[in-house]
Image 1 (cartoon, one colour):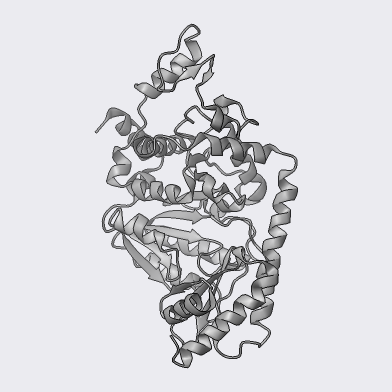
Image 2 (cartoon, rainbow, N blue to C red):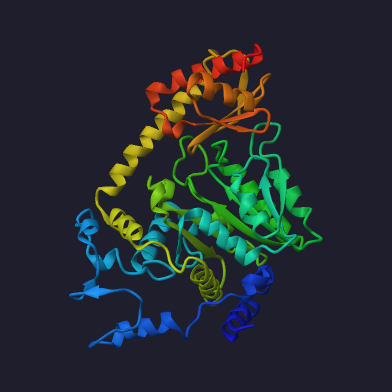
Length: 434
């Protein structure tokens, strides 16, 4: 094993031995080279005041070389802020600004120790980093039975972990914290569990209430007290889109420092929060450890990035940074939030109106982009196909009963027509039409 990796592992073992135990084989072996192209280029950037012949970009007239046909569409930005490589961990100022934003929006992190966010190529990349660092073959990844399908690719297919599911809702249509607790405690023999907490949830658009949040945290604490090392990951992809009386911040703050056997990890990003899906800017943040251990995990994370994508795209990081620093940012974001909230409320109003009879119920939703119908007497895939072929409507079938509807991309004025078409398709399928 490389001495730098050994040094990082020794830091974790000394300060947070249970976290050191959580690392996968790859997580133990990975490191960020300190002697190499990156470090020598960084040194040259500081001291090479005559010629800097280190890093692999081309320059012209003291600026990064570029084509006018590209620069003419980006004239608001200096070439140095879009064409050069971003550091593997991301633009330093963006990382700092995102951390400041996190503190404002999550008061529960006040006084807690957590790292400077590392920039990822959006949230899937952040989750992939978690998988690489902490998931080995046979490790348990605890998720609700209604979850984002990419989790299985990221943790099970790529790393060989076992997906352990529990029912998302309990008998009272609340978050099933008892099911989560049981699924975690069932990993006693393994001694380790990775738990993914995605609120608002994709696909059902549900965020637990404050009391439910306490129950979730209590379940994780109980597992830790039972001797299980818990990698607790908050997948905050849709953070901030809370339309009703639910948790209004990430559980990351409550998980930071919860127990010596709990590692809190926050994966979030501008992707959906700031409506910039194609920009691919996300973040991964670690919490609740000593400063040295947080630094060690940050270096391992940057090592993973260096070994896979080298660094994230520079232009989109610059665009996001500029937006976050603008005095117009908050007002514009609030305007979009109200549009999304209006759509969610209109959907709920339609579903509660009685207009669609007893053809479906729906899973509780109060946030995010989606909601899910539970069809009573029609196959979800058959309805999906009928909607496409007869009514020009796209939805997502999940299993035999569930139909996911993304109200995020439907104008409020068109929502009634959308659900009228879904209702017709359900009746068609029940009547034998294909």
